[in-house]
Amino acid sequence: MQDIAIRRAGDLSESAKSAVEGLLGRALADDEEVSVMALRSHQAPSGPEREAAARRLKAVLESMSQKATGVPPEEFEAAVDEAMQQVRPRRP
Image (cartoon, one colour):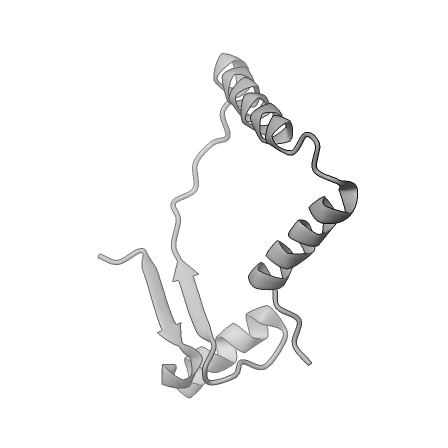
């Protein structure tokens, strides 16, 4: 049983492509890739488990913050803009 599917939009059936376009609220280009994942739901951690997860996240974020020390704000903003462009390219 597969939990992940990746297909080119041009390879989807018309009904599948229409369903994805409906979810996204926009048309798909034939050369775009569509990824679908099925994940089982689970309860969010609570109590000590949640607190431990928060501490781990805070430690990771602090470590990342230390690595950015001394980077000029303009360079930091440019790096964020570049990453966002790669993750979410603007369509003309």
